[in-house]
Length: 273
Image (tube, rainbow, N blue to C red; front, side, top):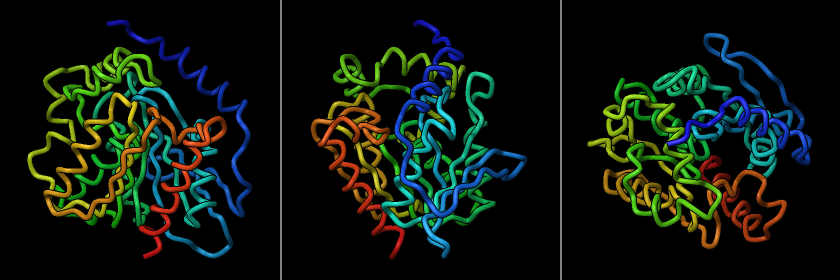
């Protein structure tokens, strides 16, 4: 297993983010600091307060930041008429499991949002933070929004093999990144939402997966397990799309753009009830 050059990966994601079109202009965009000085970015589409979403970016636990997902957060705020509070959580390998979960959990305690959301590793962090709050008998957000989430760190679902090469998320890279996030293999089952024995008491959930995604099966299975545990679940597998379609694929793919519209409509319905 090849260890990724994390510094090079991070620089590449920053360059690509800088080259993309900016998202829609909003009434209010502010960088601020949350609990323990954690960097945050607050997006508001209007002068009036709107329902608040805490957003955790993707990036395989090792890359991604406020800038890489700035366009995505702007689009969510604009299209869904919600406020978005993006979290610049600590990343592996400098800060392995459970540092990023602690960061997202702390922001949920601090901000008390209506919803917590994330894509890929961010979806994992969003739902793990909900599990931590539930286990501590603390209030959880009313809604969790999980976009192509990683829910099984053991990488034991069939789509890891079936879709793990030739598509946007490579299974070997994913295994390397998870090894940096959870250096102890024995920790991975315990740290996997899908393998959590009891999923009762979790929020209303929106899970969107993609047909050609190595993480597809674990996201689909997590949706089933949450529903069996009593959560109200909206689940859709987007045909023809790959992992990470939420991140700017609307610029090149009409199918991804249509999937974005469906996602935004679902979010709007859940957060404005």
